[in-house]
Length: 379
Image (tube, rainbow, N blue to C red):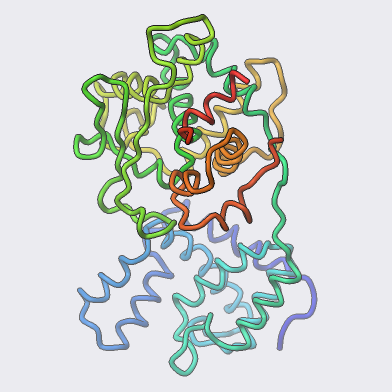
């Protein structure tokens, strides 16, 4: 029977799952193993199974493993076989997640993890079952997705801080601050996902500067599969120098301090002696110097860069800062500064403007997107 009252067990199971991963159990990849077992029952050769499982990124496998672990613990407490349990049992688990205050997007991830490991019903996956589809539609209505309509932080203040000490001069500031500044300027100028930035590489086949040095061309590693529209898989990110010398005024020189091309050139030059990876952004921490950082770590860089910019101006950083907000901030300011929706969609790798209008557009009451965004500091 379904549980009709609030349960804390999904939360406790999730914490137990995290604890197991920290102790080294992550290598067992519970969800991946269950998925492999399901595929093996179809009589597929091992190499075919391995190729099919490679369709999901390693980060997705890890996420599904953790969610599947929570579901398995929930099933064990009720003496259920997790990969063969009934629709009623799965709906009971999902309802417990709702009662525990989980968001609709989180519940969707749990369902995807269960669907990846469960044997399914009569030739259909868990997610395709009519009752579960109706349940998720009802959950979507009862758990409306809310988004911020106004910016959560001040872009002009952040850009002003990046053009001054302690983020200048680039040649002598600590590598930590240089890393934060280069990553944040690139995120603002490109309006890309953190995953897109994480996939960039300094390998000559992926990163090149123009002969004059006023442009940089960035391409993700060939194996990278973007979250967005497939047409943008092999997209080359081209950025031009922002207010390059010779300078006509002191303000012109100050704005050049916000040039992502300059910041990336200095960053690549300063990190080249100790690099242990071709990934663009690498660790500056003493215990891990030169090694590639994770997407989560890169997100922390971006948030900390905004926080440090606020602190350098003597202002308390806003609460709840998220790296994902940078994307919405960049494209919203670009629209406000006169960039067309078509150009914004091309820069952000969106097939249509619907994603921008529905999820990213902020009220910030043929120009280049990067220059439009970075020029906010001069407004």
